[in-house]
Amino acid sequence: LPMSSLPLLWAADFIPIDGHSTPYVLGEFNCSCLGISEFLAARGRDLSAVAPEDAAAGQAMCDLIGARILDAVQAFKCLAS
Image (cartoon, rainbow, N blue to C red; front, side):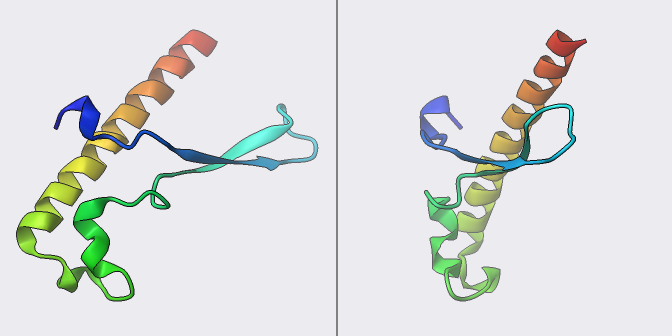
């Protein structure tokens, strides 16, 4: 999938934690508010409502997003060391 297919906007929830080494901890990344369009048929239902080709394309997008996040986290950990 080309980079132009990735969501342009992401939400990140930062939660304040007393006594932690940083004032905020990342709780989650979220792009579901923007939607993975291939899974829209499942809204209010379950994944059986999604056509197999849409499920495969949606899963490929989610896998790519996960891989890019993992790359970014690992690169950050290397810089922080």
